[in-house]
Length: 417
Ligand code: NIG
Ligand code: FE
Image 1: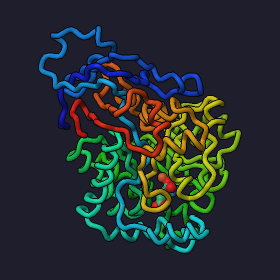
Image 2 (image 1 turned 90 degrees about the vertical axis):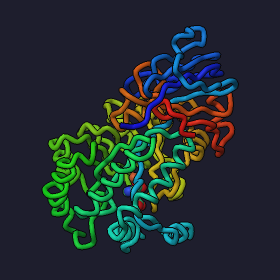
Image 3 (image 1 turned 120 degrees about the vertical axis):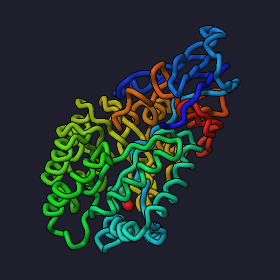
């Protein structure tokens, strides 16, 4: 059982609720943060919110047995949900980053056997303890920035044993530190060199040998695939994700990252929780996502790191998509899980409003991992997961850019920062 506590947060200057149980689509909904002006209060019992509203609604008996936190002059928001990370990996690729700075491209490095394949080698070699120790450092940094729920993908094994080890590390970390981890099986992240040109055979191997082991041990809730020209095509994606759904997993896709490839349309058709990256999404893809329940998860730090153009967030939101923001933390395309950088890029370069960025990191991020019923907003019945800023308004998140404004992080009613 995870630690949970009773907590009374009082005198909140601004309470951002983001209330709702599902993704918010389009500009009107994404700009409505459900703000309660202070003085406001939150009460949590056993890690679950029992009250979120004006201070005047709190009776003395409601807070008996609660720890107290005074939020005078402070804004409280839902804890952030980082819904796309490759948290568990071995080794680093610092040289690759320097090559890219000099003009080398991500795909060309990948074609030469670097990229994901290089992390695959290091991850296969790494012990359980080594993988856990490095991932734990990232989880601590995330908690420090107000993140309370994190998705973690496998995909650096591309063989049964290492894929299972990555997922077992994620499960172990879920149990020993406060943040909740949502595990995604991504055996189809790339293919080992010996399967180049035989991608369909590799997909069969994943479907027939890896997927059953993952589900037998309950090691993942979701399945992801890198659908991209030169990696896995539509037919292979359909085969992989259909098998995953039949095995009881939710599905998502890395889609339209490097070239336009119809990935968003396929994600909507297959009922994916989310389609992620979308730098090269087409107008048809935008329309498909807008008319679906598939969240459009944008990863601005990856576009920044790869020096690519950003995903067309403004166009997508105006067309009615539900946009989420996530880090994509990984040792290659984006070795950063910075929430402040993500918000700065989203608001300054992607023309998202600060309100949209907050929605994208809270309720829409929660929807992207199928958890909008339990996290992503501040309302009775949800987990008591919060980020308290040292400023009185959420607007400081974009205004005081690049800085970590989180004074306290609360997970299940426990003050973890
Ligand atoms: O989301 N595009 C594929 N996968 C990752 C990168 C992983 C890596 O480079 O190690 C991504 O960017
Ligand atoms: Fe990714």
